[in-house]
Length: 259
Image (cartoon, one colour):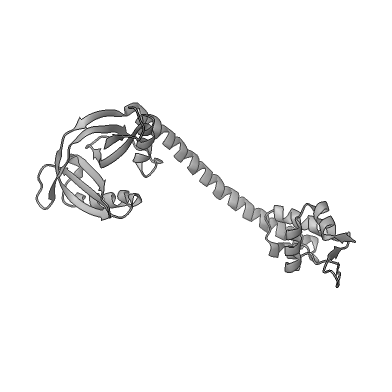
């Protein structure tokens, strides 16, 4: 007879897991000492444990393993293995597509970081009078969706293909204000003056189909390398007919930076 410790050592399955298999009725001890409660297993049960481990490694659930460890014909075993092959192939195909998507996003992010580093420049920006629509969001992750919504509403009032589109956002204690507009005065739109920025970072960004949803992800690392950090107001300038956009933000020295 094998103690539970012996069975664990020979099978590579932990004592805790053997107790779990016992509770599920998958590997029940041949005998339990009534006085001590010690579990004792027949040597032949080692093969059952090893088979169970092998089936689990093939991706079968414990319920499926219960069937596989029972009385099966060769035909039924082949059917179960064929079903599992289909499941694994489907999973592999899905994971392969996900992996390709992750690789595309990673390459795009690396390209964006390089583009930002190459185009980054610092200059003062004048105040800018625009006419547009406002919105408020509670989190930075919601800015993009709000800007898209405002731009969609703005397109119903202005032919955006012929004018610059200026998106701006700035944080307040309780909310983030989002503004999308066009230069000049336009009937039916609120006139807003975007404040001047004494020292601004300006980045030219050419978005691709797999670019990150937030292009500011590529700006922050470039600023950090120079001992800087971004601050509001943040601006995004889209010019008619241009594939690239410009990103503008105020910059401040990081604490402890000598720049």
